[in-house]
Length: 429
Ligand SMILES: *Cc1c(COP(=O)(O)O)cnc(C)c1O
Image 1 (cartoon, protein in one colour):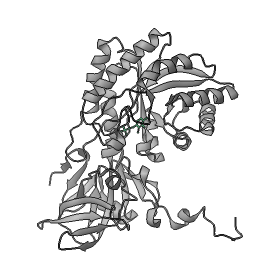
Image 2 (image 1 turned 90 degrees about the horizontal axis):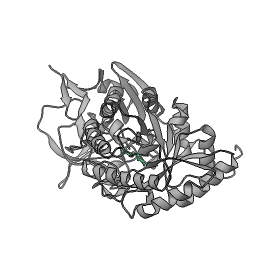
Image 3 (image 1 turned 45 degrees about the horizontal axis):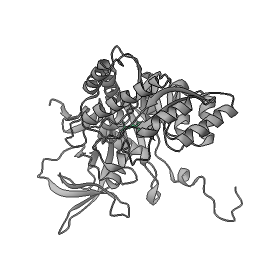
Image 4 (image 1 turned 30 degrees about the vertical axis):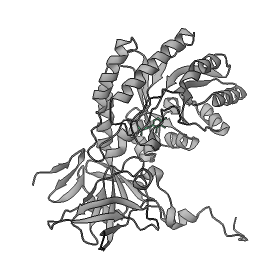
């Protein structure tokens, strides 16, 4: 039988009624490594990156993978080997990039709450740029840099006040957001930055939100950013680079975000029209590079028919897949081996003692206990937000490349979970 691609997931396909990731049968991985299990397609990640690269042909661009989407060392390694830089949001993120072979000078450090210790370590490591999010942070960074006898490379994250039309929790570029420097404070902040001996002004930066599925908010942000660049440079502060952040959405459930190549061709036409087409550019995509490259495999533990609802209880839960509970997010759920019987309707839920522990509502599935499922679009903001709630160990992760499947994270054991804990009065310290 001809392989049948999953729409929107070209590196996942059914062959002879079995779901594959690239050349690997997913039920084989579940059998060998147990469930819940995250499986990522390396070639899906590289294809997503290639779409950005095609959009930027002939331009000067540094693509910085926003690693909070998926910080596994094996995933960082894929992007480091492909020449990417990294957008980090903590000192721990930096340690991960360096451990996975990323280059320090291609790291940009975002986030509203960088500590002095994080700034010091990042300066010592020689990172490429700090994306400074407030005037208070600028002063502290200046002090820290002076104390080390260095100058911190900086871009100011500005808040362009555009509505990305996404979920409020992942919209970051509106006036009342905690992120970035307010539009009217941008010019004074640059003027001041230019006078500080511990600061070297490099660029300007914005990030308007996440899971953005339309072109409009980006076009608005580009125009506002270029207005600001003109005003800042007219005030005598030259800027080397413009960083447009990340945020491009993916298809979870029929969304139709522009593909990266097309979006950037449109945006670059605007930059060209205003004479900025040959500037050094930076972008910080996260979700759109990894989201649809990953699935989470799970096993059906029990079917629990009811008067109002039928529940399908699986061995993955909100600690593995936090997006439904956190953002009411939709993830497609498909069987690894579809059954021919007529489907029933199920709420797919995890074992955690919370009514919020659901993975999908009212899903049409033909199932028996012991069947295995794949929760799709699980490459971004799933493992990175996983927790130990209910003393559940974090899942294992596998990276597939063609017919090769490598464990990039072992399943977390109870010993590892309890490692740093002590009983009161115990003598071992
Ligand atoms: C989260 C984040 C990104 C990546 O967002 P995606 O929606 O995953 O592309 C980029 N830049 C900054 C500053 C972020 O906080």
